[in-house]
Length: 163
Image (cartoon, rainbow, N blue to C red; front, side):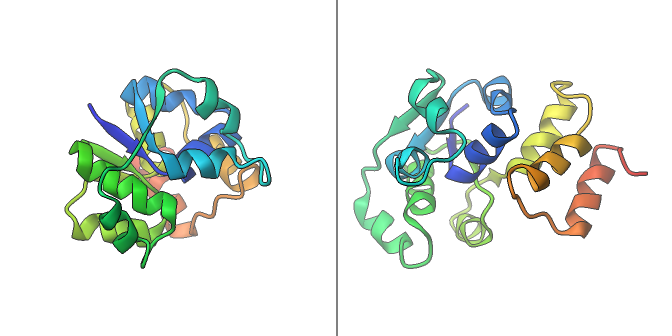
């Protein structure tokens, strides 16, 4: 399975101590150079910086279609643009992306994607975690990840943790 990730899933899972879920679900994850730079910028330290530099299951790859990246940069930030371009370049099975605009562009390009909430649902489905709710709460409280209340409740319903 070929998996490409944008910055958000790596950063947010690292922030709550659950980055290992990506390896357990997907084995290997590829990131574009722009995502690597976003995560490792010394001027703006973030969760996941050390991991993308040291974990052997996260691989950084260059995008070949720079004209596509530049065109996508009209709508997206560089990391999202390169993640989408890399997904097309490798005909990846899944793109890990959370940002709304990036998802809209992925939809237009017929790219299958999921985000951090889908990753948590899949992790529970595979019995890699026992409950999703504490991780959702950690994403909100520790990582500053915003989840609308209806979506929060929908995820809990999906994993049968609704009260």
